[in-house]
Amino acid sequence: MSFFRRPDLDKFFNKILNSGFYAAIQTVWKSSISKISNIARSIVHSLKKYSVWKKSISKASDIGRSVVKHPVWSRVFRTSFLSTGIRQLSVLLLLGLFLTTGMIGNIEEATAETEETIASVVTAHRVLLNGKEAGLVSAPASALCIMDEVLKDAETLYGIEVSLKHKPVFEKVTVSPEQLSTKDELEEALRKYSEILVKAYALYADDEEIGIFKTEEDTEKLLDQVKAPYMDDAVDAAVDAAADDAVSDDAGSVEEVGFEEEIRVDTVYVPFAEIQSVEAVMAKVQEAQETVEEYTIKKGDTFWSIAKAYQVNYMELKEMNSDLDPDRLQLGQTIRLSYPKHLLNVVTSEIVEYEKSIPYQTETQKDSSMYTYQTKVVRQGKEGTAMVKARLIKVNGIQKEKEVLSEEVIKEPVNKIVKKGTKAAPASVSRGSGRLTWPTKGRLTSRFGKRWGRLHKGIDLANSKGTPIYAAESGKVIFTGRQGGYGNLIQIDHGGGMVTYYAHLSKIAVSKGKSVSRGQLIGYMGSTGNSTGSHLHFEVRINGNPKNPLSYLP
Image (cartoon, rainbow, N blue to C red):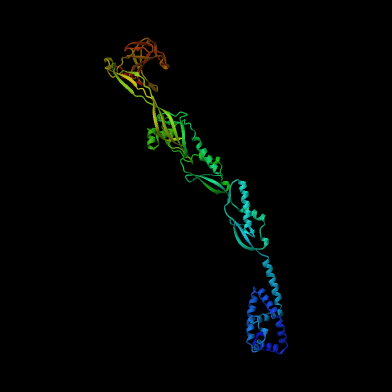
């Protein structure tokens, strides 16, 4: 760059002014200044992107300013040759330099290459679905259109409304046209990466999910199936086990059916595989969800004591253990103390009407003509009847509450009337601790009590066959004839619940229904039935329970 030093510039301009070049340039410049200026502007515009041009313009401007300051410039300035100013001069200088060095050709080549590169790329959008790249599209609308087709196909397949778990995301990028995805490529990727959800209905009981169904009608179908066993109008269970009042088959109707739990149905979007059938959920609902609590019977336990100790309703305890007899509990026996719980527990309100028995009372009348130990039934009692209307609240068919709404007496009870003697007993009866006389003569061979591992219910008086047998007290003969191990047997009712037995007789001398007096002949000793020899087996029973005869004999 030694050419641009001050001494060199002096020589350069002196030569220009002293030669014919100046005059020629002046003539040509006037006619060509416009064209040259246009060329310069075009070159500046084409090369404005390149830093080399910017540096060259800057350097050329410096050179232009140095030329203006030269003493010769005052002569040149008078011409219109350089009226374009320093920047045009700088351009002309560079133009000359570029023409001599071949730089213009290189710049034109670089510009062509750049324009070709710019023309070979396009603005596109990267499609991201569920965090994965599905393809490249020129516009998001094309991908969304394909995504809609995928959803429509899924909706046709499942037969219900569908949705996407993740929406497509678009990122703006610059790529070559060859990198753009084809429709088939994009559709395949969208189907692969999309997580399609279907519209479904979730059933909840107290916020616990019971199941997910394809339609809202399926939820109703399940609830109806759960309630169905308890919606029958016929009520054939016992209303009040304590009174044993049975409900007739056509006496009840279901007033209301609901659930113990709070039921809720929500619309949800889930994968199709999570939808359940009504049958599958029904099977789950019917499974017991709570272990039944049990108790083992101990000595002295009764249903009443157990119900009180564990705060269980007595009637519920009987219902839960209907296979057991409360009066015959055995040590080590297991009973249930609670009901199994279900996911859905049906509550019913039933109105029932049933007949209830009204018990009769017993009236006692005094009779001076009878001994104090004698009684006589004057009139048998008869139960009355009442029609009861009640509301029953049940859970899963088990009664929890009962409300009597009305009670109407249909038939009044008839009281039982019993006469009781007030006359003092004869001396023969009142002696000792008894009131009977010995029924025969003989030797006491067996007493009342345990014998051969079982209870001997009377005493045995042995004597020869045919020995007379007498009534131990006045009374009425209620049985005569042969009876099992007793052989020939006579039974006499003496009133007051006392009955005497005379067994193993060889002959009976009275008949059933006849009244006999104390000491009257009734038969003869023998050995009929289970007997090892001639003897009288004599029993005393009070209200059906065997008592020791010796306690009633003198």
